[in-house]
Amino acid sequence: MIGKGEYLNRLTAATSQMRSEVIGTDLSGSSPPSVFVGRANYPKVFAGPMIAPVHGDTSVMDRPESWISGALTQEEIIRYRLGLVRGIHPVHVHTTGTRFVEQLQEIALADASVESEAQFTTAPTGISLSEEHTPFGPSAPLEHLTLEPPRWNRDLERIYYDTDLGASEAVMMLHETGLPFSTVEKAFSVGVMGTKRKRCLVPTRWSITACDSIIANNLLTRVKKCPVLDTWRVHEYSSLHNRYAVILMPTGWQYEWTEAFVRVLGNEELVFSDYEGHMSKSTYSSVGGCYYSCKMAVLEALAREQRQAGVIVLREATSGYIPMGVFNVRENVRQAMREPGLLCESISELVTHLSETFTLPMMKFIREGTILPDMLRERQTTLSEFSRTLSRPGSGDLQER
Image (cartoon, rainbow, N blue to C red; front, side, top):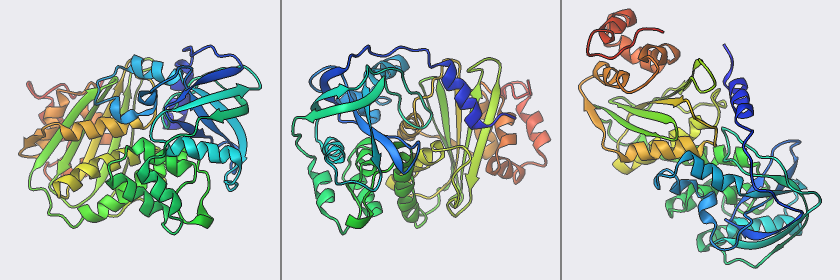
């Protein structure tokens, strides 16, 4: 079977014909604020600001937390993102004392959009789409960058000047103040937190997963001390050509993420899955950063409720879906957890309910998972018996296509 990475590369290539802003070699506008640090050729990478060719408050263009809750369409989000122009300049991740890196840090620390002027060596071209990071528009090498001195966010400023505070502690402190995840992640990426000798630039893709993991692992420590949920429950949400179902089980912590791509490119029905038991994964997930974004979002909700549960999350991307970064998972799962949960008597009742919601036959989700089939086996004689049960009239169409 085709791997997820190869499939997403094909999907990205198929959707990369979109057009962004036409920009000359001189650009005057506002950074939302936004920066991007690449990972190619690490530790010598390309980094730079992202600037919109308009003046004023452009914060919505780089604030994923407001997109799902604000009911923005996929087209609106992409239009915002392709309006951001990326300047690139070569830097070594451990060289953070240069004026250019200091400018990137000023942008990331800013409390509002930053008025900026950029000169490029060539006219910016192209776009970037990814399942890991949000899209952005054309890019080009920077020749010169000028910023109006921004006002720093007070919480970020305190972290910046505390050079004895570890980066993980800083991430959690900022998260608990209520700062948007996207703001915390950018600050982490440009090396403004952590002990003085360890500060460095972190590629944006890695920074996102690092912050998701730091927050999730800290929350998990707290959640494991909470009483276990006493019922089966499912939270659902759909947006941006995706459906999500967060299944909460009356067990100790265990977690499974299973995602399906159903006829996005053609007639494909691809399912990818990964899981962990009571202990967190010690190796990087085979399904990528979405595993950690989802885990963090669910643990936020469990920590608020002060409950522990086993968690299975099903995600289905359907025709029209375009890769736009792991924010899509994080914010949709957050939204799902804000929705009232449906209480069920058993895992069988819960899965039967979901069979009427998802396009993909539920048995395909079950057969690609690990925890979900195990939970069903504990309560059914065989999975084939369960399949027959779900195929009865009124139980949803779960027959294999």
